[in-house]
Figure (spheres, rainbow, N blue to C red):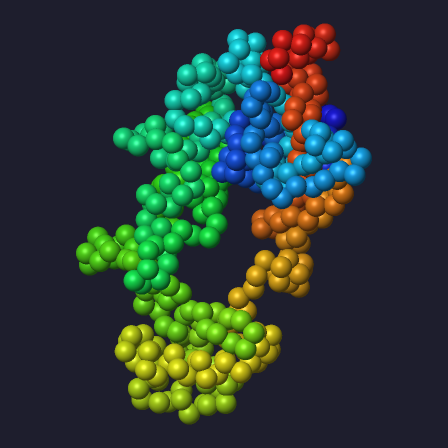
Length: 425
């Protein structure tokens, strides 16, 4: 491990040396579950030194989430017999530290770490860090250039700010849940934790913007990201449809609100997405599927005509069913090649083995010494000069306490042992 002149750790990251665009940036990660850990993980993949801080009595409970890697050497049922792959995927490339922030020693240690940090990320309900005595105003006093990123269900302001929230809360109150599913059926939640994940991405953007400002001016700031806000921003044309035309969008199934053809269609061995709705793509499609004369059919020869629901249902949809029904997904992709947007709808098993995914290094193999190999998603951020590092390990609870506290809090072995004996770390 090496330390910069300003005291930041720049080496000995779990799984490899720290490189990348954020080399030398120190992030204190006081988060759990997904929205916060994913945010700090993206920063870690970009080269930041991320220190995951957990409560020694109540660590991140995703450590118990399935699926789990199992050890052949650990005692069955013992603490080292299993390791959550879910936790590992969102906490790779991080140092592990435990701090009991309900104790005065724990608060003092966090303040010492903040003095040497650039970013702190937390995803508690607003007011929780203040109750602990280590909220933004207190920590800004320790380090005026600190970027304090707070991810929460409803944000730091407003009448809902104190409400508990999960991903489903954001999907429900941000509008997406009401728009997803099929007409005449109850709305359906999006099939992934889109509230958590969208908040993560906005938090990373806000953090990087605030970091740039802090580097130029020496002034840190609060980055306030709400899951509800994040979900609302993903509703495409729903807001303006309501504010301009008074329309409240509802579930449309696999259809687009107005673009046609642009949805799922059955084929011999599953389903494909077909999006050949522009005049250019439509003409190409008619050629590729052996009916070039349809491109000049006066009822469906323009995009505007094909957008008309009655025309689409009567003429266009049956035509696509005819083109696709006796062909496999692979055959259809082969027919259109690079000419028309047609994509096989793949399950996760097919995606993991997809040659394009492999070419983009989006499934990475990581070797955990006690548990064997873990395959997980890589980084979608591709930087030519400072590539991301997604092949890192996630820490065990408090695994790097001694390393972090020596380097960033200037503690000696005797003091570290004392804090461990008192249960502070």
